[in-house]
Image (cartoon, rainbow, N blue to C red; front, top):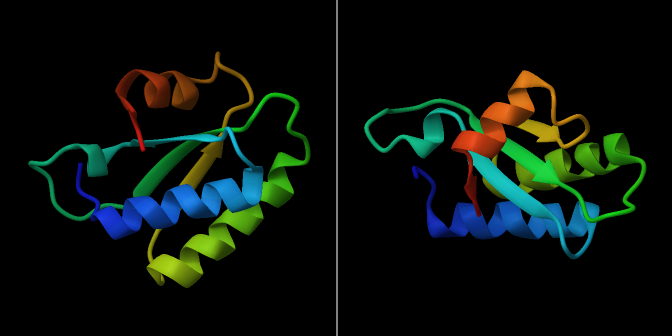
Length: 97
């Protein structure tokens, strides 16, 4: 996984601040592969049960991440429909932070 500990901590803190306790964040995509370089940060967020208004929460998480990690490409996918291809890939290949 190509993230520093402080980046992982920031991601987890921002997710918790936006979605609440019990949120699960997975890193997937190119940053999981140690042999690659560069790439954006792809995050798959599973909110706690009963969580609503996920679009606003996703926006809060993105703003928090920009403040803590600086300007970089960050994609946040919030769990909604496990039949979507992106969600299947994130669940299959993602690493829980």
